[in-house]
Length: 175
Image (tube, rainbow, N blue to C red; front, side, top):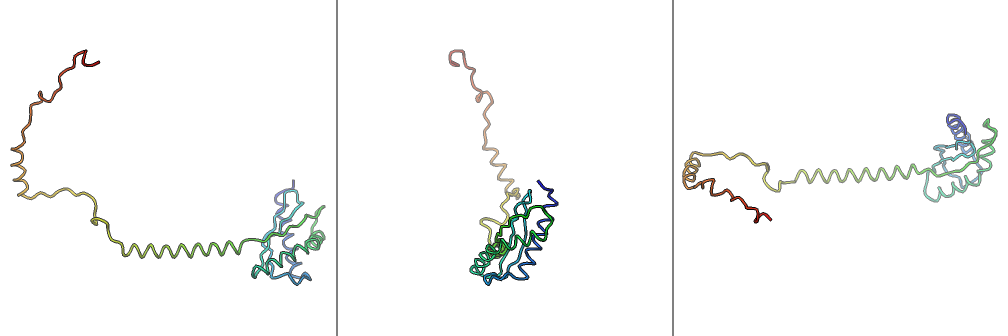
């Protein structure tokens, strides 16, 4: 297995070589506006995955993918001439999903902003279900309330403690 730094350098070099060759032109009319975004090389330096994007609609993307697939052999020989490696890695072109992911993220962010606006509007017009302050507060007594409490105390009769105590149970009733 090769050094990861060497694999990274080789990937960068392959990216530049392929991008320059595409820029100089492949004689394929199907090839659209292609941008090489990244290259990943396996640890043994035998295989390179080339990620690309195409500016345009779905039909132009499909045509560009077919053109790159047809030009893979020529691009591999171009890479082989310009790198210093014993073996030239095989190339695989993979359409990069960056534009689609970016569009999806933009849609999600727009939807989140709309929901935030709705929540802010609901918060502005919201009213409490009960009182504004639902916590129990201590009662405030008036002098009239104190007079009523004294009269109520006279009516309360307290029974002696002996009447409330339970009688001890004998051995037979416990079983």
